[in-house]
Image (cartoon, rainbow, N blue to C red; front, side):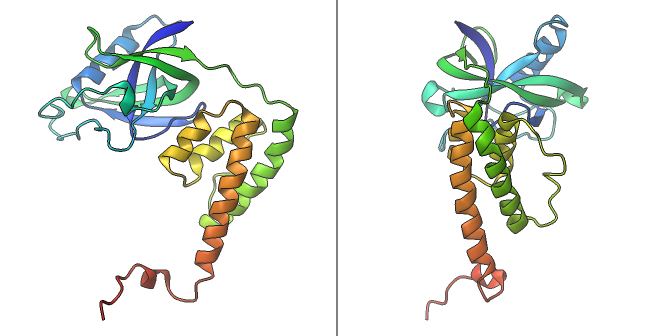
Length: 237
């Protein structure tokens, strides 16, 4: 069954359970925040986050004067966004001078965009279909320790002092989302992980990506010259 959902196109991928802070300055999204805050307490105060494809126009930058962009951004269609998104549940709202907001949201549930609609609302909406909640199966339970070990090895190469795994989630699905959001991956790779059909498929893909990235990092660390030298342009002579 489809549902009409307000959506916020961004240049990032949101995963269930992950925190996403946002600064809201465009009037259309200020209106959305006001509507969510005024909604019934027992309703989910959430909106959809969809990721912009490369080349699509992102929201205009904040001018800092509280008035938002000087002109509205071009309309966004279904071809400008990836089709799988995640809802962001409103957890904290701080109103700022000029009508802007700082909000704290948490990813809640995945959805599939069926159609993008620019209706009477000032913000973008979409007809979406909820994707099934994930229940880790036996395969996911077996893959999770391997993925965690690969993630630890990757972080040790990337950031030896990282605190990302101080509190390791026991649930394989939560772990898969943490890896997807934390590893230095491309937007397309993150989007592929968000759209994975189940936890086992996501963990299996993450194992391949983590092994690839760890191999690249290990080779870079083995280079016997300062890394700063590698950034210097080659001499034309």
